[in-house]
Image (cartoon, rainbow, N blue to C red):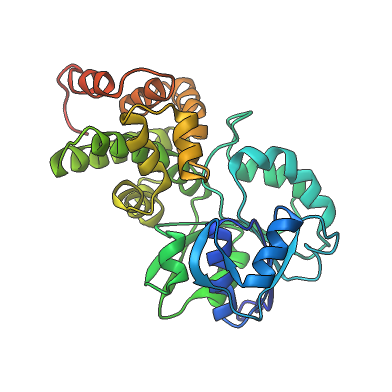
Length: 336
């Protein structure tokens, strides 16, 4: 078998924390990188100062990273790989625009973790519909906090989707501080990415109530169980949920001070509304946008997600202490 063709040029659509860190990662691996911010004002500031203070303060971008905005009609052309680092809630409105903007032969890699808030569909379904079968498409997921990736701290990730593209991404990114594994379970990787954010909100609520390690460990473990049940119902592999996209990302998101979803849960427990909590952190907490759609998927498959259900109730205004009390008061059950 011949070696996968090299990815030499990358455009990263999305100038948030993860998009910026991923652009830096690709540049460290000698790709020509273009970071595409949402607005020209944001792009001009990052290009001038070589930092992204709103999303990744204190980390300097190398001078060889080009910075532009989505207003530039050439922003997404002339590259081997387009990386999507945009919130789940805008994928539905941006997918067709992206499909029109790229040229044939451009591969697409999504970093977004969530479900489409409008339809509940997995994001790959929206991208496949817009891009067509001829466009190589994959998703990357795992315990990848942007702040640590930008600081070259070691971590690992999985890529699922088009196998040839996965091999090319693996070849580009593997190195001393970032290791990529291939995974053939796209459904499982995407459902892990959506569900773990919801469990992380629950973990943050436990933190906000002053609970200790026992409570968090219990939430993580039972959260993994309900994530796996949902995945199994939709044909995903149990092993995916025990891997980097599942357990790995779940532990990282539930325990890290970098985790937006954990922090949102903590703020909701302190008395803020979900809208106020997300505004306070200044970035998107995908679990807030995924939880209702996740429960709809569970209902269609007749799968019980008790932790996610209480998170949804808390997001809707139920007191967090009452949510935790009701979770503990459920009927006795067998672990499985």
